[in-house]
Image 1 (cartoon, one colour):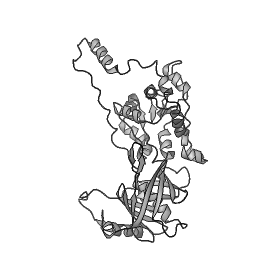
Image 2: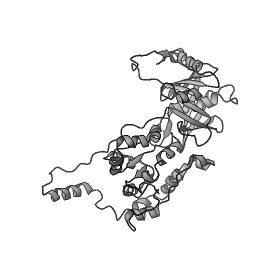
Image 3: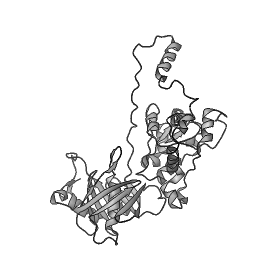
Image 4: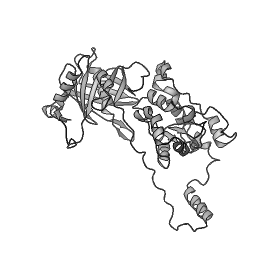
Length: 382
């Protein structure tokens, strides 16, 4: 989470391109980026100008939570907070979240204030330069965010200790605040107890880019590591291929993509337009985009896809979720399709394998490939 206060020394004023820079270099499937902006800055800029300034990052999935309650929900969910000198970061520290300082100094920060103490004791954040990510460590952890999270996990409670003198009445803040406010206006407070409500999820939901520059790294056996970056940014390193969602990605990306895919809607969702079978649609897409070793695919569900390589039959792809201590995690099927495409077009894999493992960040997803059945081939694609 990026936390920006308002005024000339704020993070957004001094580093206006930082949201886009982070959206460009952080692996899309491993990070969710959010910007919490001070209400005064929202008023100063206005919604239209703010959305225009943040458009590249927003198109890559940046969350921009509302200034009333949604920002607090994002902070609670955050794994790390990058902040200027705004006091919102004190709440992050009180939640024991790792904090990185992105304040370059100035006249607005009061010496010996709680924020000055916090910024002096947390690691500085150095924005990654997409043009100078030279080694694997930089590529896997641009800006050192993951390292800061790992280091913090070895020292739990250190951030919270920095705010012990800032927040009082832990667990009783609502009651005390209500009593003080009603006393100021000379009215008896209601007799009913104060009941805190859950914070809302930020709305709207983050955007999923429709085209990705995809890096591929083959591991031992049938392990395929996939790292995706939004295609409208220059990729931090040369990509293995471009993947584009047909019908929603721009023409430039669709024409250049080696992996062309489409997501099917729920049953009965297609009220108009031409409907094709999955078998016919994949043949047509490859014919409309000749040249190169392309792959066409239909995403049926989170665990099922249909794939046709540039010279081969229609295949059924089944994706198993990743089992984790707190439950099952499902991959974006489009990311798994990039692993399948890389495997099917790899001259070293002949004949094509019947299984592979798609690694996305620290998670691994088992994938099975088999000839598509007539029923699968006949699924509708609009």
